[in-house]
Amino acid sequence: MSIRIVRLGSPRVKNEGVRIGTVRRPPRGVPKSEFATRDYYDVWLPVLAPSLPLMAQAKAATDDAEWNAFARRFRAEMGGDASKVLDLLAVLSASTDFSVGCYCEDEHRCHRGILRELLAERGADIV
Figure (cartoon, one colour):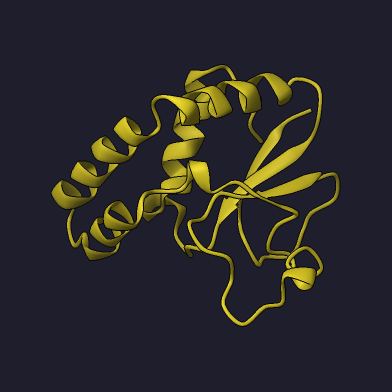
């Protein structure tokens, strides 16, 4: 069993399991009843998304130094309750398939890449 890190809205793969949206906002112009059928997500978990001010910082990052500053702040935001959710997902990855994702095109400039690292640090089984 394992976690997949995906781009929301991309076609699902076999055995992907439940798709968890770790985004601050639902997809624009898509009725809630169609989130899953349009391959966005089955469950919305915004506690694993950057805060709105931090999201703006990430979008404005133009170089590695600015991105690294965002990454440090996002990791700090993932303390507290979010840390407990990450612990839970890491444990669940040993017994069930599911996916975690965001809309961004490039995982290397997206918080889902940092979520991948945070989950791996907790021993999650990641595809």
